[in-house]
Image 1: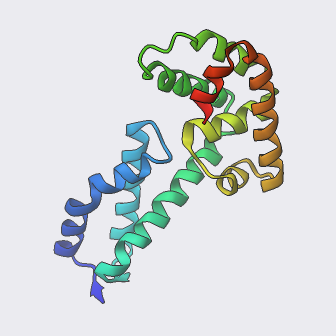
Image 2 (image 1 turned 180 degrees about the vertical axis):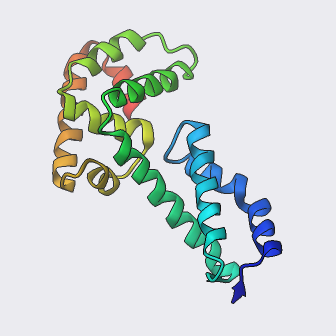
Length: 173
């Protein structure tokens, strides 16, 4: 066990900061938000000077803390009115990166036909890559309700994009 002193803290920060930012990128697209989450994590570590850690326990502790912070970020964001718009824009950017995706308008129109809650859950899955359990936690609904909304979203998207069936399988599978 190591008592957290300035040298150990600095070593952990230098060694793991960018790695933890990349890890947060599994959940958060915005690089500034990722960096903020990791910085807040390190600040909380520094404030807990009596925290006893080992080199074996630091990364698992950091991963869990970062993941929880990312989920909490979405919990806070989901109540904002522009959240769906932001997620939609992030998804649009991801589609644009797919070598000038030519069916973007069709996909966006199909997305707009989803009921609001269904679209929110669908975007959380597609944009953030959160698991069903994490989406349930963020949205304050059951896992079965998440599964229902994802299934419904795929059904509607499949129907709306049936003239582009080959495309649907490329994007979503």
